Amino acid sequence: MAKTMTTQKIVTPSAESLAASARAVQKGGLPPVHLWNPPHCGQIDMQIARVGTWFYMWTPIGLPELVRLFSTILRKDDDEYVLVTPVEKVGITVDDAPFVAVDFNRKGDGLEFETNVGDRMVAGPDHPIRVERDAETGEPSPYVLVRANLEALIARKSFYRLVEIGEHATHDGAQWFGVRSEGVFFPIIPSVELE
Image 1 (cartoon, helix red, strand yellow):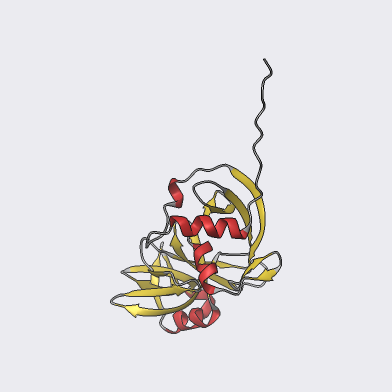
Image 2: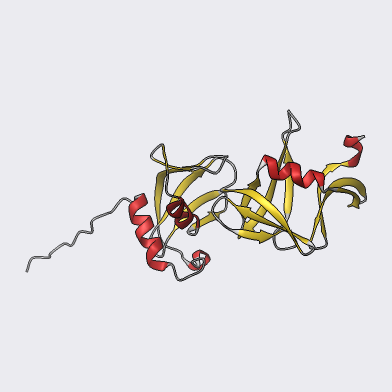
């Protein structure tokens, strides 16, 4: 009796297949990507530039609703950014942070940020602000946590507005200039550097 061998066709993930899978799992909120553990299918030629523009095969993705859809299935595993669905996971390139905080407004005693893909979060214990400084130039790069270790780079105009409402306070035993949101002080720069 002859044995028959079955072969599975290996499908290379594409932006189209990822978008179709993402649409299938949308139920009015963010999909539970933290619960999904599909096989890693390699890298896809998708990149998020530092300014927040998403590219596929070196071409900007021009449909904001498609970028938003992809952003809902984005996850960071260790140091790798991946797009994940229940059936596949692919790595993508992120130049800095995957999102850009394009604006913020006061909301009670908090600062509510909005990202380039429409996410909103109030800076505070669950959404801290942090500032990294370039070792050579000293230039600050401010970030706010959006969700599950995914950050947004705070756009320059918004950062300048933060500086305008900043204050001096003691933080970890030193004087800092920073901002306060939901009762939490977020240091930006040591006060002595402003003297």
